[in-house]
Every structure is written in C-alpha cells, then in structure tokens.
Image (cartoon, rainbow, N blue to C red; front, side):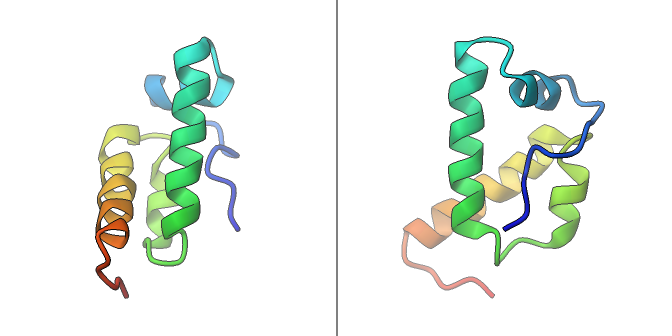
Length: 76
C-alpha cells in the first residue's frame, strides 16, 4: 500500500498532520491513514500526489469514498 504522508507538501494542514505537531494532529493522522487503507484501491492515484498541496480537497475525496464503502456501496 502506498504511504499517504510520505511526500513533503505545501499545504499547512497536511504538513502539520504529517509532522504530528500536537495531539490533535496525531489523531488526525491516524484517522486519515485508516480511511486511506479502506479506499486505497478505489481512489484515483492523482489524489495521493495532490494531497500534500491540496489537503482539504483530496481529504474530502478520501472521506467520501470511505463513507460510501462503509455504507455498503461498491466502488470501481
């Protein structure tokens, strides 16, 4: 599985979570990594490349896909 926080980025929130600057960021990192594990096979590879610079937009895609999978929908 591809690592979601491997690349350095320009998005302030992404960098804070990546560096785990406080307990909230540590928890956020765990959440994002867990959601990613659920949907890694369904998400366009560009999401991983764009996440470090467009965290909110790409996190929304990950969160939405994970929610749909959890609701029982089959993603392709």
